[in-house]
Amino acid sequence: MQFLLALIVVGPLIGAVAALLPAPPGLRGTSPDQAVLRHGVTVTGAILIATIVLALGFDHDQPSKMQATTDISWIAALDVRIHLGIDGISLPLLVLTALLTFLCALYSYFKMPQGPSPKGFVALLLVLESGTLATFAVLDLVLFFLAFEMVLIPMYFLIARWGGSEGVTGGRQAAAWKFILYTLLGSVVMLLGLLLIGLNAGTFDMVALATDNGRGLSTSVQLIAVLAIGLGLAVKTPMWPLHSWLPDAHTAAPTVGSVLLAGVLLKMGTYGFVRIILPIAPDGMRTFAPYLAAFAVVGIIYGSLACLALAKRGAGGDLKRLIAYSSVGHMGFVLLGIATMTPTGVNGALFANIAHGLITGLLFFLVGAVKERYGSADLDTLAGATGAALYGRAPRLGGLLAFAAVASLGLPGLAGFWGEMLAMFGAFNPAEGLSRPAFLTFMVIAGFGTLLTAAYLLIVVRRVCMGAQPQEAPQGAPQGASRAGAPEPARFTDVQTYEFAAWTPLVALTVLAGLWPAVLLGLTDPAVQKLLAGGKS
Image (cartoon, rainbow, N blue to C red; front, side, top):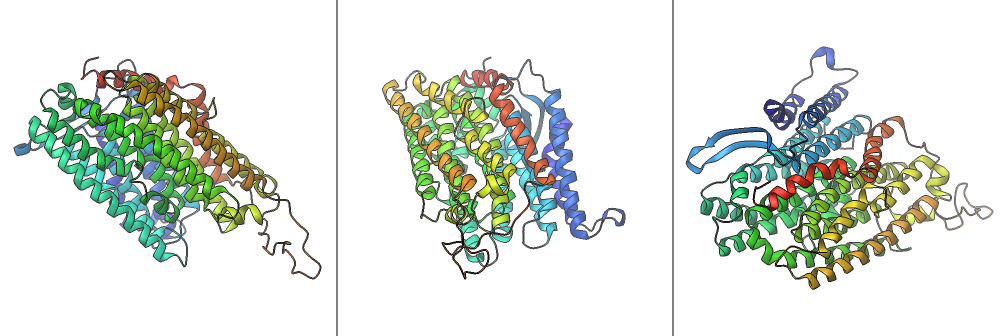
């Protein structure tokens, strides 16, 4: 188990180096490009299998216990250690990361985004996977920071070099710069907070710090640390009003870049709140929790209103941008659950994390497929020129888009429901020392946000899947022109085999988590109980 976890973290890095080397003659296939894309599928598939084996070998009777641990001294002078381990909190995120990266590699094998050599694309994808997996597996504050930063450069290049389409290079370059500048500035502040904790406590070991539960840190140190670390994590989450880099990054990113950005990279910020701030600086967190909850519910309403504005007729809203703004609202529920500082709320936050990764990952896959077929993700174009739209032209694609939309709005029986409900339950009865009237107000505002979420997603389904009825072209008009003057798109294929292969696991897990939430809650709850109790089971 120790070796397996180390292999899962380091394996993608080795694969990234191998991707840059010439392929052996027997593995080149029809072209070097095909060989390197096949290499990406093979490496990410092997990491996924190793992660599943790790999950099967995990002691499910003791999910609160750190398992598969490795603890080796690295920088003795600072007591920085190569400390790895997993518990019920990190294991689901590890599996989600391995799954989404494999599905992205598989999708790219058949539909490689336009850009430079596939070698660089596959190498960056694998470095991104390694950094994300390491973030969820390391148990040392310095290593956490290094892993946290490791994903920035690969994502920057994926957006800047493989994002957008021809003619919008300036847009994707600007989005990539905005992404990296926001996250780097947040990370600098976060590093100061991590160093403050480590130097005052005399250790960077996250397990020891969580067990100490803030007793070795003064209240002032905790307040400063929570503010500094929280700002860095809030940028990555992203929390309103530090979210403005996200819509641009998603709009410019290639399909697989958007899937990974929404599916796993945003989870790094909320994971840091649960793993570091809650157990290590509980007094400081208690002070800032009401403010975090307030920003969270503002984000829920803001994200929903922004989506409604993009979805209305004549707004010229981009569907990818709309899904990006929806992430601001969904991650608001995660932050609200964390801010309650209760087992119910934190479990809801962790559940919502996984549900958002599955559902929004699927949504970005589907929107990418729609854009590839129509040549546009503009909602007015999709609704105004498509006649019967997806239900008539590509019923399977339309059905999947409608499924992902109703899962995202929190339909009971699907994964999106449980996380939001538990987060609001946590707000109904927050932790001792927090103002119950304030959190009841936050709960009501969040509940109103669920109504707005349902409104914009149902509008999107109506406009994109149902569309407008086709109009006969006026006599003498060019063939294929509508009365409005918009040309109808050429007939295209419905969902293809490779798309079914990439999307089916996400659909199945969304249904499984919705119908059987105990699969996930059985892992997270004991670990959360121990974390909030200061390391005591």
